[in-house]
Amino acid sequence: MQPTPLVLPDSIRLLRPDEVPLHDDRDKILERVAAGHRERFVAGYVLTDTAKPGYTAYAEVNVHAPAVWHLFRSLVTRLLPEHAALLIGVKDEPLHYRPYRSKVSLLAALEPYGHELARDSFVQFGLIWQRSGKTEEVFVEPAKYFKVWTNRPTVLVQDLAESGLPRADRLAFLDEYPHVSEPVSHPPEMYRYEELIERVLRADGELPEAAHPTAGD
Image (cartoon, one colour):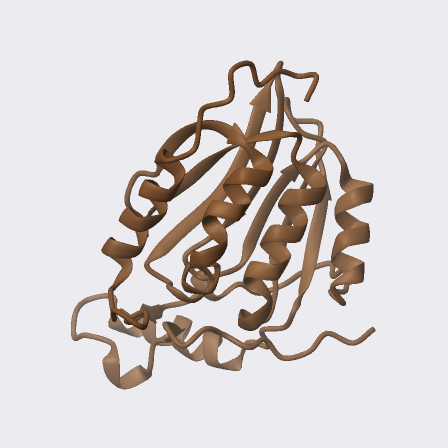
């Protein structure tokens, strides 16, 4: 299966040469800008087996912008146990680490904001389960590609294949190159990323905490 050119959200793009400021590193930045515009960004994933504590495989995934939320929901449903914790924050700032909740309830609470989370490049978010030295995590970077840590690589590969994403030896990711994140307004109230994060945190806070999220989930 041939990878297809990546469809990006409207909130992020590569920097243009005319936007590079005048300073000592300008030539180096211009080289990276040019490299980014030559790069072939495509949908797909890179999977790495690892002997690191906590997980046996790590994946980075490019997916078309309209499919970000669907893939997130699918990966969380299939990879994470019964309970999970929300991670969310502003780009380049510390994350909010929330308590463990029912995974099903948490996904339902996030659903009304799925399109907004997938679109807004000022927001990073994910769900994590981490117990007894093991980690399952699905995380969406501000540049809207995925990072996945798992002990279930076969399930991960199956889900990605069903989503039409081919495996690659190497992929380019947008945040490897100079880029611009542009604030977007989310209808109907036309709120921005700060309010989006607050709304998601409130939705999470309305759910009961999991009493005993254990390794037996």
